[in-house]
Image (cartoon, rainbow, N blue to C red; front, side, top):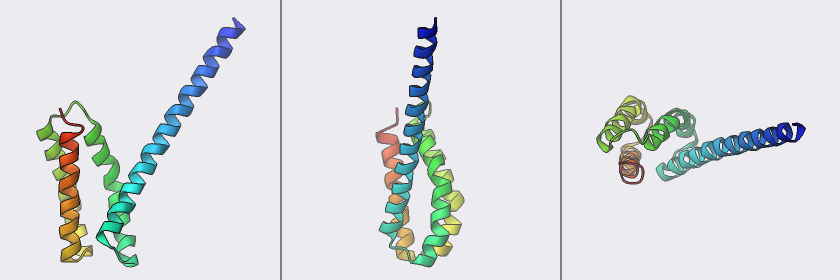
Length: 120
């Protein structure tokens, strides 16, 4: 009986560690994507202070949509565009016209990836 309890406890600990490390890896991946976007946009330090919080808030929503296999491609596109439309006025006010055009291209690529890689 004790062996079963130890085995169960060990299995439980392993599963917790795996889920924590997976969660950490996903957050790290999202953060590196955010940093990559910031770098692609060639943000000034002042712009970074304003843009990074917006991107950090947007990232988990975008990832959730990309990973939701219950959504059709059209639903994913609609939801991603809705998220982008919510932050567009803020981003447009912060970025130069050139940077904003780059952001639109990055967002289009995100939509393509969501519908090709994760879509059904």
